[in-house]
Amino acid sequence: MSTAEHKITQSLRKQAYAAILQQETAMFDRESTGELVGRLSEDTQLISSAVTSNVSDDLRSAIMAITGMSMMFYVAVASIISINKSNLVHKGV
Image (cartoon, rainbow, N blue to C red; front, side, top):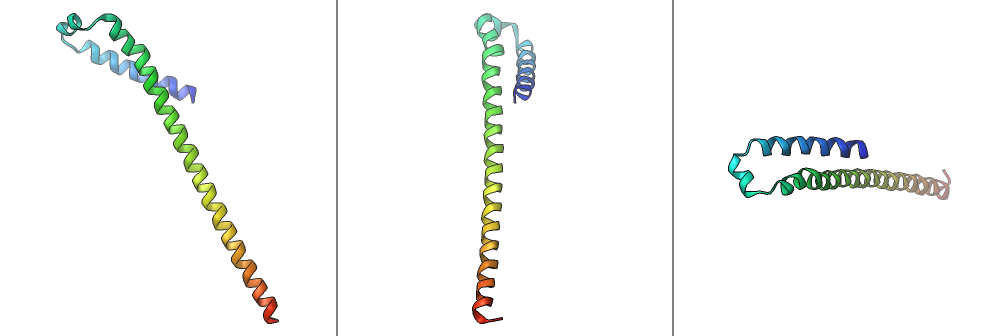
């Protein structure tokens, strides 16, 4: 996931930088440059790692759910077949 995380971080930084450049000059008098640089470096990294970990967790959960449902279906079908075979043996067919 590190490649995806780096691409997301890069995209977020580009978008944030473009948004900063579109601000009026009065905004730069109110906000410190260190805060803006911090937003570009730390906040974008935090957001991208949160997004990639959530996607990873969602994929893992979906795969586990599908696997679990498949196993339950398999066991149910195997049980029905086993019960039907045992009923046929008891009936003498």
